[in-house]
Length: 553
Image 1 (cartoon, helix red, strand yellow):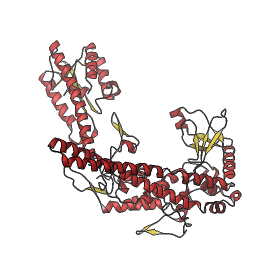
Image 2: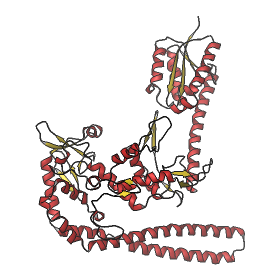
Image 3: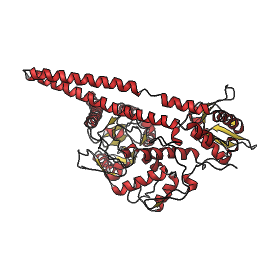
């Protein structure tokens, strides 16, 4: 009587399944093996997923093992043991567990006999394959690091709006602007910098039929607010090129994109690697508008006009998440930590009546606004927080010292009589030159900071008069105007549980950029309410371009 067999075929990704169709090849090989050994194939299992996952976290293996444990088969046939599992320990576990049920596992490629020597050879082969895979990853990472340190990009993908200057394999040293896509990038930044929203821009781009960055044949190539947000936050568009900027966590069958690495953990690529499409001011204003629009959006808040601290001003003490505005069954208005955040972080209840919190916060803000000295003192601290003079003096002395070292080495080189001494001196001179370049770049940065502090001092001259004029009618302010005040002072309120004293804490900052042009130090002019156009496309209407807060009820 013929033995009954089950076949397992696996590939790691859906891309492999579609492009190469290796599952069909594995099944064909396993069927031929079963036929040559006289097995009767009663079940076939196909899987797309990682072989590094714990075996019984894989649904296909779980289904196969139900057949094994029911003793409906005596043989499991795979094309290669790594199709069963990548980890040698997992392969051994499955082999031993199958044997308990009178089932053996056979591999078409590299199947060894069941003797002690055969099992030893099989186990050593598995361990060596794992070792070689680890070494391959190490070599790949080492090569990527060496390429980045030599000043070349390591990413195979390109930001939207660029093409490779030298697209040949193993080259790809710098990028050039693709004008067709760059025009869309400029439109995105200018729209948001002018006060528009990502949603309205998304609708406009999709209505015009403009392909998105992820456009693929045969698929709906629609823009999304997430895509627009990624473009606006990407500093590549101001000419900053990085290696090891992004980081991902790989889990079975999916990749989780993590937050970008801090700049200290990246490798900066040479200037000119990626040309700028947007200037720094437009990039900054578009990013700030994106954040503000998200905070002030009313789509997630019913009766949004009734809540002063909605969408970002009030925070949970435990998880730091935004408190949502809600209405109790009796009609009372509350702020509370969003239930999904509470479940995820285990936040204790910190719900609070909206009237209590809003009146307390606004009374505190009024005390500040009615005391002009606070504004002036707070801004004065910003201007006085200038340590650049001492740092510049230290850098200048270090540069003078390096110049003196270079002169001494050059004098020594003139008297050197052997090649070894000359090579040593040349290496030291190269090291000094590298140090000089680093210190010079740092000096330029400090000079820019010093200029910014000087502009801040210019801003302070008329600050008191402007603040008193802007907040003269504080008691008559509408809800929208009050929210604008909170935004000017970057107010955040941390709310604690009922048994905590104080019940909330208020943090206020002061950003002069909302009143002054940071490039010149002069007061900003009031925006013109008339419609505007930019490069042939309609700019944001005044209802969008102005403050986003809802009017008072």
